[in-house]
Length: 106
Image (cartoon, rainbow, N blue to C red; front, side):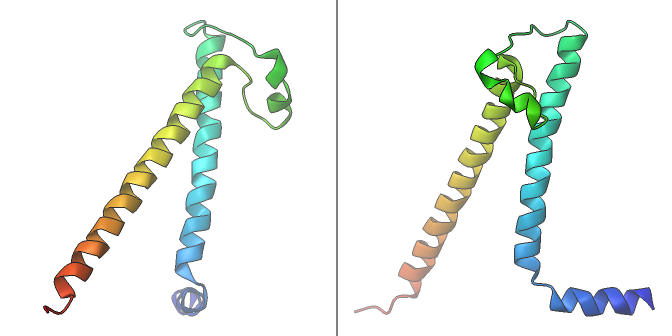
């Protein structure tokens, strides 16, 4: 019974937007977890602690307002954007290559 119910709902839900939404949520959670991991290392005195006074508002939304945490989070975001950019570029080049090989010869 549950199987049929899930199949019925799965046919009605647009999967691409759902996966994009869940992927974005998981990425945001990963960034938060990185900040928490850095905080744990700082509490154990394994990493230095450089508090950014101007970024204290980040603590209000649950993020770690230290230079070390924000630097690592920024690097991860930068890596994700670079990976996405390379993926999009390769996808565009593949489409162009297919279009040029499928073009009629003159």
